[in-house]
Amino acid sequence: METRSRPFGTAADAANVDERATLEHRANLVRVILDAVPGGVIHVALDGSVVEANAEAIRLLGYRFDELTHRFTMSLETTALREDGSPYPISEYPATKVLATGEPQAPITIGVRRPNGETFWAVFRAVPARDTAGTLTGAVVSFIDITERKRAEEELRRSEAKWRSLVENLPDCVLIMDREGRIEWVSRSLPDLEHQQFIGTPSHAYVAPNYLDEWVARFAAVLETRAVTRFETRGFGRRGPSVWYETTLVPIVEAPDVPVERVLLLVRDITERREMIAGLAEKERLASIGMLSASVAHEIMNPLTYVLANLDFALSERCPPGARKTKALIDARDGAGRMQQIVWDLRALGRTGSEELFYVDVRSVIETALRLAGPEVAKNVRVSVELTEVPGVLASESRLCQVFINLLINAGHAMADLPTGERSIRIRTRSDEGANLVGVEVSDTGIGIEAENMGRIFDPFFTTKATGTGIGLSIAKEHIERMGGRIAVESEPGRGTTFTVWLSTTRVLPPRAEASAPRCGSR
Ligand code: ADP
Image (tube, rainbow, N blue to C red; front, side, top):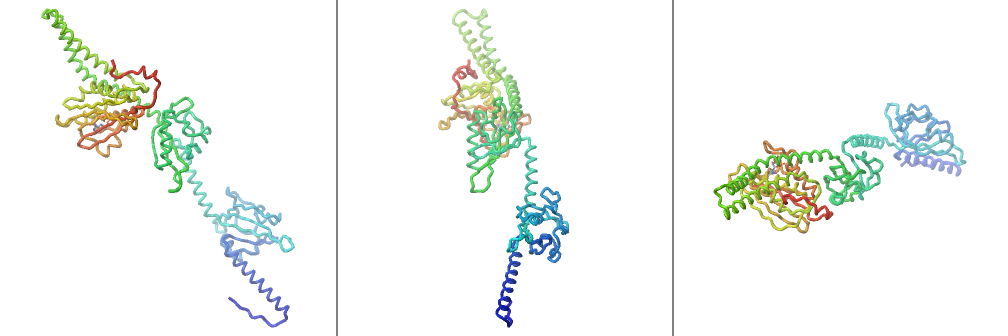
């Protein structure tokens, strides 16, 4: 540090020298402080000329110190810009306004184009400078560089606009919900419901009553596990539960240890797909009736021949009256009874099958399916059936019958290339009383399903067969899920496959509907 020796002179001279030194020291200190602050600072005199500028002001404005000082603010070759990019008039400069009004000016964001063409953005403030008597002597302008922040904001805005336009043009509807499931934002309206009506309403208000429990459980699981979940649900519009949605719930995780506050919901209208699959289901049903009818016709031929032979004998002169005739008629009646059974079974499968669910005994449905599919499937196949007493399940009999027939036919196909002695199908009932479920297992000793196909076998049109359609299992799954059940599969390539159909024993139905339940295979 510089040390100065005091010159000889009077005490007053000495005091003056001391005071000057102190002032100089202060002035230096102020300069050092000003140069150290992260913002630009300019002192503008009353006539608008720049008197002082700190290092940051010089850096930002792009002038040398001597170029900047003693020039008038209005003569600087910079251009000021508003945030919308339009020119900012000199009369509006914060310094100009302070000099005109003597009042401090509120912070304002201004873009400044430097002489070299570059632009920086800063928040400008200006306050009046006054002497000890309070007279206005100029203005002090300070400004903080926010170019980087502006650039980041601009980047964010651009990317937000990009995402927004993407989201708004998606065929899917996107919603954001809070952790209570209230809708905070929606990309567009859903069929049948207007956009603004959504905001603030609970998302579950749009779910059909039968699907509400699943919705609530899935939503809670997303908050808890933070895992994405996808499921199909039924929408509840003004005109009733008319729309099918594929729904994906995505937790918005802001930090690993912070609870999930928002959930993103992607909604895809799959009503048409569901209707198409329902249409295919109908075709598949008719096709399976067609396919089975050849073998069923063959099945009928045996008892028919038997009936005709017995009747012919009873009517012939060879048949003595009395016990022999009665026996022939009883045999004919037995044969007719067998035919009636087959026709009943076919009729049960032929019913369109409504969506209504009734309590059914799975065992009688399995028996019907076996009677119908048996002739087609069970040729040279050992079939073992273990049907224990199980509670009634909620199902549509004809559809359930169709599902079992499909599983049996698939089991038959899977074993087609095996030697006769190795073909075996086992059907057994299971029950999970704790979960109020009854299961039906259909196992085969066939070729099994390769691991890479396991996730695809229920997809519509997935088939590994040369003449397959790939719709049987997708329809089976659709039917079972609509009954509130599920279908599971386990398989070991080369050893066999087990499909298990689980159905619910709960959900209470109106007694009237139950009483009028059509029964598959009933007579
Ligand atoms: P499709 O029988 O017309 O192929 P499905 O939807 O019924 O249509 O079956 C889809 C696919 O699932 C079949 O092509 C087959 O690869 C597989 N699959 C179904 N059941 C079995 C089974 N029991 N054993 C082995 N593979 C099976």
